Structures are given as structure tokens and as C-alpha cells.
Amino acid sequence: METFNPDPKPGRIVLPLVLIGMIATTYTFINRVVTNNDLEIVSEDIITDIVVDETTVEETSTTVTTTTLPDSYVAYLEELTAEKIQATELGKDVLEANENWDNQSVTYQEAKDEFRSFIATAENFVITVSEPGPPNEFAYLVTSHEELKTLVNLIYQDTVELLAGLESSDTGEQRSAALDSFNKDLDQFIKKIEEVVASATSS
Image (cartoon, rainbow, N blue to C red; front, side, top):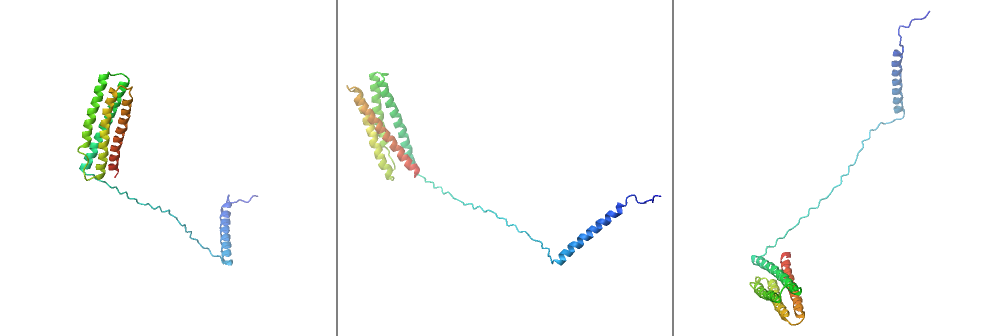
């Protein structure tokens, strides 16, 4: 005859007892190891050094120097700039008139009238450049202006020689030489003006 088991799941009682036994055994073992070996449980503090790169910013200061030129100086520079424009226009007109004559696109009388007008223009240009001139207190400007006066007089003489070359009985050699001289003197005149203006603005 079979014996009746009132608890259909006897493992419910056995499993907790096994777990309690395992926990007790583990605790006893660890306790014994620590006691017998004089072990010390030390907690270590980990110190982390943080390195911060320092960037040094150098402050630079810029000093701006403003030079104020006297009104008379500025007025003279403006006068020179206007004279440079006049000289450039005269050079273009002379070159065009000479080419027109070489190409026979104008009559001899028309060419003579144009070349005479250049003489009158250059004569007036001499007066324009000569007066009033730079302020006397600036020695450099006075010296440079004397060079400009010399050059403008040479330009005037070149225009006279151009007409003489046109009226000459040669085959154009005199006029060609006069034109070369005119171009050279005019170029030096313009460069001298640029030099004076550049020197004033850079100082």
C-alpha cells in the first residue's frame, strides 16, 4: 500500500535550507582566511592628475601715426597732380597729330596748325608750372620744383622743334628726333611729379 505524501513538492523546504548552508559556509571560510593570514583590506584612493595646457595669448598693440600735412603742402600736391594730367593729355595729342601726318590723314596745313597749337599749349604750360610753386619752407619741394621748371621748358622747346621738323625739307629726320626728345622730357616730367607725390604720402 502506498504512503500518502501530504506535500507534493518537497523541494520547497530543501532548497532554502541548502542556500542557507552555502551562505554560512562561505561566510565562515572568508572569515577564517582573513583571520589566519592577518590580511588587511585596504581601500585605495586613485588620484588622477589632470594636466591643463595653458595657452599664453600675447597682446600686440599697433601704433598708427597720422601725419597731417599743412594746407599749403596739400594744395601744391593737388596742383602737381593736375599738371601731370595736362602733361599726359599733351603727350597723347602730339603723338596722335604726328601719326596723322605720317599716315597722310591730314593736309599739310592742318598738320601745321596742330603743331602750332602745341607750341601755344606748351608755352602756357610753362607758366602754369612756374607759378605759384611750392611753399618756400619745404626745401625739398623747392629743389624738385626747379627740376620740373627745367623739364617743362625743354618740353616747350621740343614742340617748337616739332614744327620746325614738319616744315623742314628733309624726309622727317628732324621731326622724328624732336618727337623722341619730347617723349623723353615729358616722361621725366611725369615721373618727377610722381616721385614728389609719393615721397609726401609715404612720410
